[in-house]
Image 1: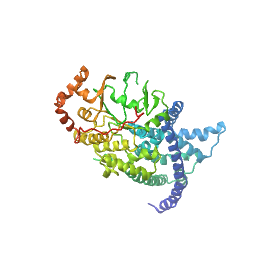
Image 2 (image 1 turned 180 degrees about the vertical axis):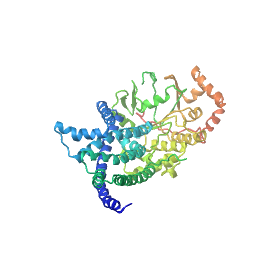
Image 3 (image 1 turned 45 degrees about the vertical axis):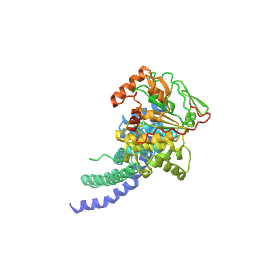
Image 4 (image 1 turned 135 degrees about the horizontal axis):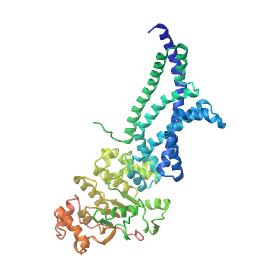
Length: 227
Length: 272
């Protein structure tokens, strides 16, 4: 590796990494937190079978899952201004990512809740607990354990998907790398570098997932299948 | 219920301290009857009168049902212990959340209930670490903890390995001896014979016979009951006419099935 390339990489690494900490991570965390709220609401509406709302939720999930994320970003950021709705790029990205991920996570949560045996709810009723008390204290903790690995999947996906926000002028990690590459013409090195940084972030989350799974298993007193 | 009528005009009365066993072939509606009685299934018509209060079953509101369930407890065929709670937490959960007891108080009651079913040493075990028999005993502890007026048991031993049935029947027998009011749906004929005051025999959603336990086994001339008991005694090699076998019959299922008289409490208005 020649010295010029080494210098470019050394100089750009902290810049890209810092941009990751300042933009990519907050974008991911905010969007994902919102997505979980949306997902939870959607799952509960479907489980409780609230008549009209249930239809609305199914429509939302159908719409979001049936259209590309990039198109959704463009629609909201470049399209909505035609209707007089102008959003700054960062909030716009948070909104779109949250709505998008919320639809997928809603299905994860619904499936996880449905995987808890019906008898758990009946047992709750029979000791005098209400639907919501049983949901909160018995059903959801068990469902969350089931939902945790696929939700971690979604989080990891989302970190990488935030690179699409570069298209709507959010200067996150990928755009920062793009700029350095454009200036130095070291495309291979710079895109490999930013890939490594994504890998670092995702590795951290993977570790957190393993830790979280162990904790949840302990809290639920459950055994897991191991050969 | 799904368009098919499962129960047709079932009528039953239970006095305080009485044990009623519901017998009958599979699909006769025993479990449905019990589930309707605790509002786990919605009856299309009918009413339940408990402690002088009448509830119209199809139209009962959430509050009415909740108030009713404060007086009842239910034991499921497959235990339905809260999987994310320890044995003790399973017992105390309802006390704390539904009845608003303080945790220390609830735990004291919980430990007492677990002690009663012989599982005080398993208080901190999760259900997945317990055998089926132990799980069902925890479920019984959960049922008695809040001091219900009646316990409904839906085939409490049907999901258990044969060698674990005895310990559960033993606990239920103790409850009966303590004067607990119970409705037990069961296939354990010998057990029903030793523990129940009355037998309700169902077939095809109808009550065929409702009579005292002794009469049911010894004087019954109903053809359907004869067939049912006949097929069972063939299977387990017992003859229900032979009173001597009565002892073996119950002893084979329960370690301590004694035939001593129970001290019973009868209260006014304790009808259900």
